Image 1 (spheres, rainbow, N blue to C red):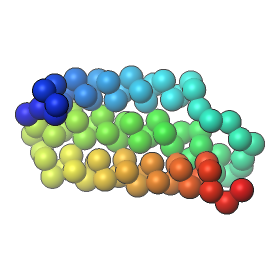
Image 2: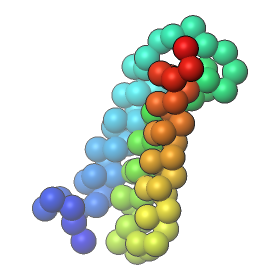
Image 3: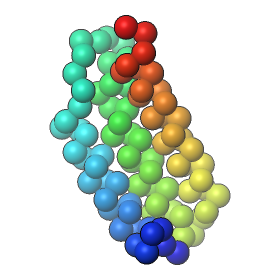
Image 4: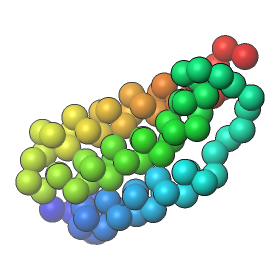
Length: 86
């Protein structure tokens, strides 16, 4: 299986690289509580979910779709926590 001509494991490694990048580079707004967590770790978790989806896609496509969906929900939460409501 592949996506755009590249095997899923390559996409998984690239996603892990982006997740590590966002551990060190993140938007800064002075927030507290759950919004701080979402801003600080949300984007990295999105990419970790996508990486996990890529790694399990060849053996378990249903689980991969669920993990990718969790990544999408985490991205929505990240966007809301970072940019919405002030």
